[in-house]
Length: 392
Image 1: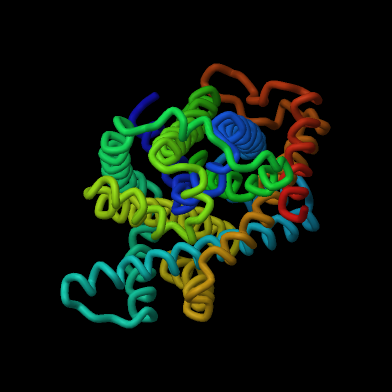
Image 2 (image 1 turned 45 degrees about the horizontal axis):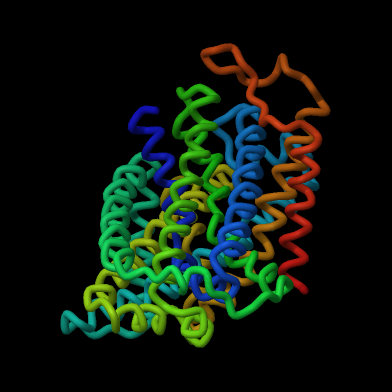
């Protein structure tokens, strides 16, 4: 894997690693180590397989295309309309949430430097500046994201170095709840935390010279990085706080404060990590929306820039205190867009079975995800499971 593909994997990982990471210990700690790990692995396998289905559809549709064109080629105009509606709703919701969270962090940072801004000014400033990076193109995002991701890994490593020596095995194995319905309800938080699929069409375009096997490895590596990051963070947090303490925490700030009471450096390090997690997620999601607008409206970059950021910014300004609520809506939309839509695209392409029109790589191979009908059926059940988790 070359540096370009590695950078693309880091874009996938950076898009997945958002502020939801900090909420994972709070929602899983009460169920103990075994059930928390098992559910995390199920969610990871389901989301990674669905992402590979979208990769297959992107490659077979011709590569170098946005979701808009892929949907039109595979599902017709009706499917294109539904896919675009879901995609826009998802990306706008996610960008709204990231603008709200990043605006708040920027406000606190500047306030500490003696620069006073209103929340509105902070959100506008963040959107305009980060938006310029997105408008510069995937290559620029790739290079900047590599630097940000390295800093994220360093801050996570510093956090783990502080927490791991004081992990209590009793804390890890303790559980305050055996309510499996409550455990299943946490699936939406975990699923949203692996929500990187939206960047795949853009990365297929960016890596058009790569073989299909390399693209597959890019997606798998990009999903494995957040899996291990989430599990390590879950174990470290659960090992330092009892399940009772975790259940009674009122939010992410209280989790950071509780860990900071035992380790003085945690507050500053986790604040840096949270800011970088929001920024890398924003860049990945905004890149997907920017490329989708470019594919749909085919305007110059200045017009596409305005189309990409005006609606999420307006939404964030009017919903400044609704960070978690907006993420909740995004999770429901993501189930349809990230599981059912790629499945429908892939089924249509496989039924057509027109391999003569499919794009082949340098090895002369037409890409297809392994697993056949069984894996496809399990993916459908996975999507139904996630929808059930949202409403039970």
